[in-house]
Image 1: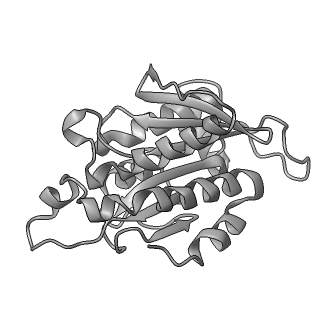
Image 2: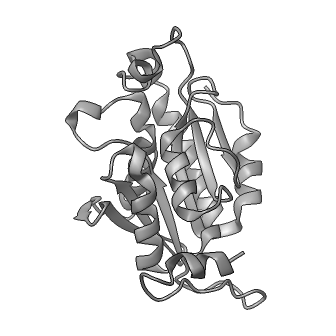
Image 3: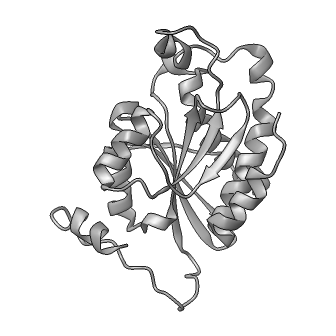
Length: 224
């Protein structure tokens, strides 16, 4: 699986490391957690930025437990913060490329941090799920989502983990763009804190115990 990752990055820099089967977990093993969205005040509070909300909540939760503020650094292709969870290092990324070019940020930070493909998790909004319904999958189609589409195009595969946050599909034909770029109404906004508690727990499990256990934890829950 990792031979294609080496080929993907061969022209840019040192190849990504192969997974070391049977050698156990590194004490500071790295994971790249990416929340998709669009940068700028015009997009704050919109449905399409729910990926940002997921990773904001993750970083805030871990840092609050340690009595630390969350500091986002304006880096190449995105805003980055780092947290540690029981010996795992999580590099958290909010791409600044805008949604349709998200793959550029993902590829750069995978290469920069030498992240293995199975240590990548994309957090994203999903029209196919009712608002607040959460699903974790190890791969699959982009389902028409331009951010996922570009990531798959750049990485050359759809087999990367994604955490999907349902935003519903309550719009008339031809109004999809206005819907996803619209503000989340108060009655749905009220559900987000409980949802992000669940996504935070699932992301921690993904990093500590693997995707199958995280899927069992998240996908069986009854969501708001």
